[in-house]
Image (cartoon, rainbow, N blue to C red; front, top):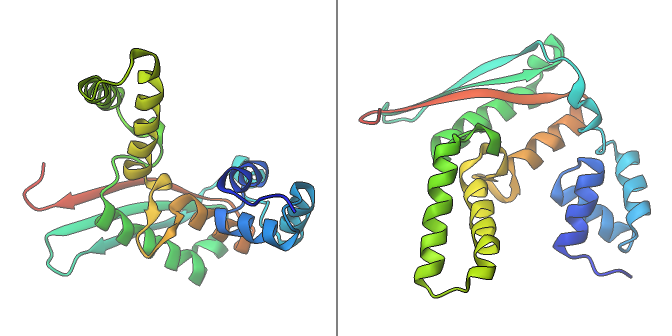
Length: 199
């Protein structure tokens, strides 16, 4: 039996678009055999997320979340392909969870490309300076910066963030699981977060 580590789980996820937890379950089920795991996920209908990515999404909903103090609020637009899914209970619950998650985790953008280049460059120069301060050799600086930037994206990009209600899965995993369940593409289009006293 092949060892089921994070790398093999990630490889299966990249192949299928299924959530991390589903990939891990599939690999355990087929004792680490990659091809059998792909087949297992296909049968379960979880490998559909990436195939649906190109389909038009002209329906959806705008969900709001106001924290009970009234000092923090979120509006998020989540799109899907049909009005039928927009009214679906699972879809509605997902949008509520996303708006609540945004309120709690304060992401800078939905995906890495959404974060302004000036912020990224600033972070890189901070990481480089920190590594030099710690006496790290020049030849590994880029690797250190790359690792810290990956962590920065995980903390600040909505899709990369661990879901506040279940930190074992990311928001992307949560969304892919819903896509697999309802059989329709879904995307988090945009959000805005307001907090009293912040500009």
